[in-house]
Image (cartoon, rainbow, N blue to C red):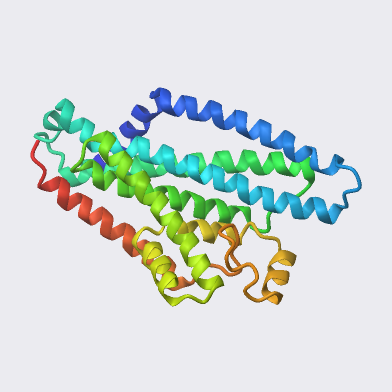
Length: 281
């Protein structure tokens, strides 16, 4: 119950921040603008329904990538000061002498932030999908699974930022988390290049980065469920022709990798609890 109470208070505190209000307003503006842009596709001269479907599918992936970046930035900005700010302001010192364990405080904050990340991913993704469908009549093959992977990407980065918050100042922890996010994305591009040119060294570097920070792997999991079946079939027939495309995935994530992501989350949460338990207040 104490964990749920902390989670509720974390959500209430975050909802009062101007950051989330600004993020919500900007998201609505982006959804309206992109929906209008999608609605222009069927009106182009000499365009066939198949070409509209193809263009819509690829633009949907680009829009999803934009939202995944916004989600990564937002989750980092709300998680990086979560513990560090409470320690610096003395709030943690006032709360923890009461019958609340440090692990309960940290897990309550993680649960509240994870719910916020999942809620933003679901609402923004739903609004965008509705706008695309109204504008073009197109919907991805499995939008629910794609949004689940995007939300998981944000939760992974939020968990990492929360771990850094137990030791680093808010600004420092946020910058480190974002740098690692972009390093993982570049590692994904390296993996694609390594596969395209059959270079074992570059491929190993890309795989290592995908295991160390699984955000890029989860992003490719989302891509797979956004690709229409005819594009997947054409890419498979072409062999490695599209292996170097960082915005393409021709297969779902294997179960072993999904298990690794779960183990990674549990390990980082465990490390965060260990670090916070030994942090001086």
